[in-house]
Length: 265
Image 1 (tube, rainbow, N blue to C red):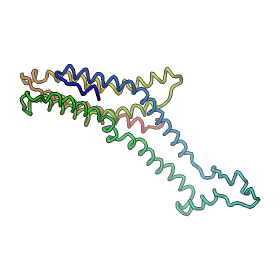
Image 2 (cartoon, rainbow, N blue to C red):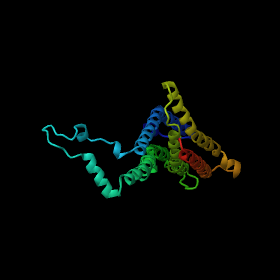
Image 3 (cartoon, helix red, strand yellow):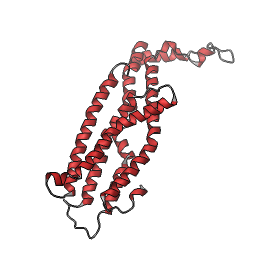
Image 4 (cartoon, rainbow, N blue to C red):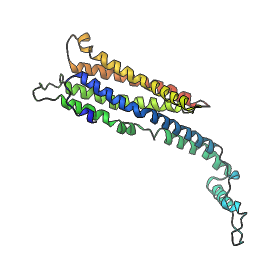
C-alpha cells in the first residue's frame, strides 16, 4: 500500500504502480499455489478414509487390553457400546456407514472446498486493490480541476477499480481454485513441482493479461468510436470488457467443474 500513497498525475504512473503490485503478488504466488494444491491432496486423503470407513475394522483401547483393566477386572467393550448406539440412532451399522460415505462426505466436500475459498474471503484478501484505486483516485481530485462527474478522471478510475475488484477478482479466484484443484497431484521431483505451480499460475494469469490488454485498448476507445476524449467513456468500455472476461472465466469454470466430477479427478 505505501506505493499507492504518492501523488499520481498521469496514467503512466498508474501502470508503474500496478506493475509493482503484480510483482509483489507474484513473489508469494508460487508458495500459495503449492500450499493450496497440498490442501486439496489432503482432502483426497480424507475422502478415501471416509469411503473406507467400517465399524467392524475399528479398535478401541479396551480391545488392545483384551478387555481386562490393569487391576484385573473385566472391562466393557467401547466398540460394542458405540455399535449399539449407532444401531439405535441409524437403525443399523450399514446405514450409518452409507450415511458417512454419502451425506457426510458431500457436506465436508462442499464446505471444505466452496466455503473455505469463498467470494467474501477473496474480496477481503484483495481489498488492497480497491484501496489502491481509491488512493490513486483521490490523488486526481485537485482543487483546480473542473469537477464534472462525467468527465472527471478520478471517478472513471474509481469505476475501473470497482469493476476489477468486485467483478473480475471473484471470477478469476474461482478459476484459479479450480485449476489448483485440477492440478493438485504432486509430481516426482522438486523441479517438476515448481514447474507445475508455474503452469497453473500461468493458466490463471491468461485472463489477467487479457484484462491488461483490454485496459490498454480502451484508452483509445473514446477517440476511435466517438471521436472525442472522455475518460468516462474509456471506463465504461473497460467495464464492458471486464464483464465479458468474467463471463468467459465463469464458462471455463463450468467446464473444469464438469471435469472434476468425473471419476478419477
